[in-house]
Image 1 (cartoon, rainbow, N blue to C red):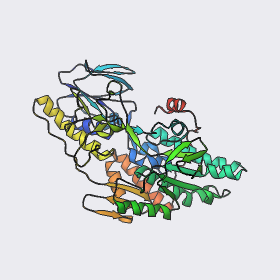
Image 2 (tube, one colour):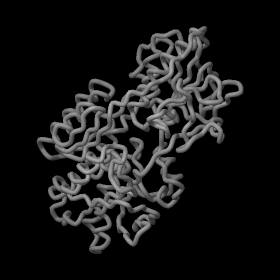
Image 3 (cartoon, rainbow, N blue to C red):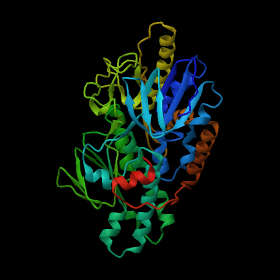
Amino acid sequence: MNIPQSSYPRVVIIGGGFGGIALAKKLSKKEAQVVLVDKHNYHNFQPLLYQVSTGGLEPDSIAYPIRKVLQGYPNFFFRLAQVEEVKTDDKRIKTNIGEIFYDYLVVATGSETNFFGNKNIETKGMAMKTIPQSLNLRSLILENFEQALLTDDLHHRDALMNFVIVGGGPTGVELAGALAEIKKGILPKDYPDLDTRRAQINLVQSGDRLLPAMSEKASEKAEKFLEELGVHVWKNIRVTDYDGKRVSTNTKTIFDAETLVWAAGVKAVGLKGLDSEELLSSGNRLKVDECHQVIGVENVFAIGDVAQMETERFPHGLPMMAQPAIQQGRSLGDNLVRLIEGTPMKPFVYKDKGSMATVGRNKAVVDMPKFRFQGVFAWFVWMFVHLYFLIGFRNRVVVFINWVYNYIRFDREARLIIRPFKKQNKVERDTLTQD
């Protein structure tokens, strides 16, 4: 990898997400050589991917070059590479561009969509965990309406304008709300010769309420907001299959839809060499102790979505969200310095700052440790928090201007088919998008 030798211990970080970036920043001025490896050269702000999918934002406003994030930091190196295997016996990792030895290894690979073994849904459905996937979804949505204009088959036309979103978590709720606003405010103007009133947005949740990780009040309010926007909310229904045109469920309910978006679960991105049963927990996550060290492996740590840190409050591991990853990255940075200096590491204590979700214009729900609120004020809080955690001043300004413009004009300017997308098998799709 052409990394120079150093008298400082080498910390190799796999993954440039929230956790990996927070850790690298924490170590930026310490006596350590930091090497960050990622298959993309940018950090992706995943909470706003749904806005890229629905034309509210362009991808460059929620992505930021990793090299620029850590520009000017001494003893920092970035390599664009795909990690192929971890060799813990001699402390090295193999990538598609070569090998590198480490003194301390940090796995921060994040998560990917979990299709729970359903190959048909994985092949013919749409995921929304990366920027390429979001751009694919945006193209497919717009192309479907273009095709709807050309068909005389009413049933096919309806299927092209019908959307099924599987999963009632924040991703599913926010995407459903955004699509409903497009149907209401944009489609009638863009397609005056198409009866867009027949378009349907269906949100399917296997449980008995939306946003199960939030309070019951937030769930009830989110469902009410969605229904006001015209979203069809289906609860206690599990999607079992999808052939590209018809969505089957565990009930008699069947949806004819050309677009299925799977937002029903995630799993950790695993690595060969750290995939034995004794290391893994549910969701493919690595078992770690209270100091982030992978249990049973010396000098290997894991943070963020890939780490299963069980606590009294979170017996199944910390939430797979940005805040735990950021806090773990900062905590591990301090602990690695202690480890290098020969002092005891300190256990990590997660500070839950709450959770939130937006449903649409002036509609959001926020659960904080001491306060819970919904509606317009919650919507402003949601916007402020997301702007604050965006990386880069330019990105914050661009996103803020876009939001103000969209709010005033009831518009989404980024509804562009930059690259046409056609449904393919998963191998071809991954080859094209490098997902």
